[in-house]
Structure formats: C-alpha cells, structure tokens
Length: 159
View (cartoon, rainbow, N blue to C red):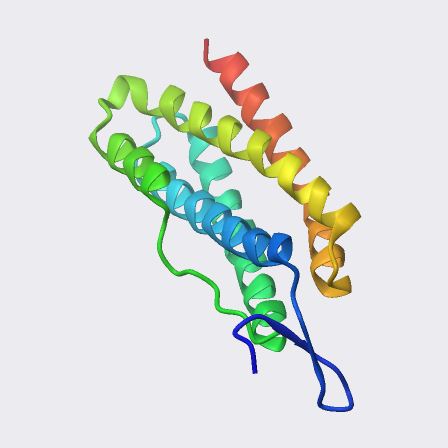
C-alpha cells in the first residue's frame, strides 16, 4: 500500500493527491510551530494577555494536530513531528529575543504564519481530493481567522 492512501471500506486504496500530501505536511508543521511558539509565549511574554493568547494557541493547535494525525493515519500518511527549517529559525530567534522585544516578535510570527496558513487551508478546503482533509481544513479556518484577528489586535494594543 502507498504511504499516502485513502482506505475504502472494501479494502481498496486510493492514493492521496500530491497537493493533499503537501497539505498534511504544511498543516502539521503549522500546528507544531503555533503550539511551540505558544508554549514559549506562556513562559516569556511580558503581557498577561499575550501569555493567555499563547496558551490558547498551544491548546488549539495541539488539538488540530491530533485531529490531522488521525486523518492522516486513516489515509496511511505520515505526519512530520519536527518543524521545518524556517520555523526552527523563528523559534530559535524567539528564544533569544530580549524581554522587551519578545511580545512584538512573537505576535509578528503568529500573524505571518496564520496569514500563510489561511491561504493554504482555504485552498485545501475547496480543492482536496480527500473529504476528510477538506472537512478538517474548513473546520480549522474559523480558528485560524480568530487567531489572526486576536494577534493583530494584541499587536495594535502593544504599540
């Protein structure tokens, strides 16, 4: 059986489309990054509101990753458990950020990642060959939009 396949009730499999495979990797890396950034914000943010926001992102994206992992597993697909190079660098920079600049850098990272994620999730929701992935993407869009809105509001109030 292919590493990326959808299992049908009859035991047959239908390979996932390349865009669906790419989406699984992208979504997993997005969730991992948001959760890790959120964990760091809980520890390092100066603002209590940003610490709470970090907790919410950690919780929401950890739940998203669990759901994505279940969908991918059902399809015979693997989900990455490490960050991509760009996000590893962002995490490293956030860890090294001075106390005064952490909140700003954190929110900037959240805004950038969520803006990027929204486009990919919208695309997957409308064009996935997998009903499970399309549903996951549609369901996740509202939370991504909420996170982006809140991050922008927090950034505006922190200026």
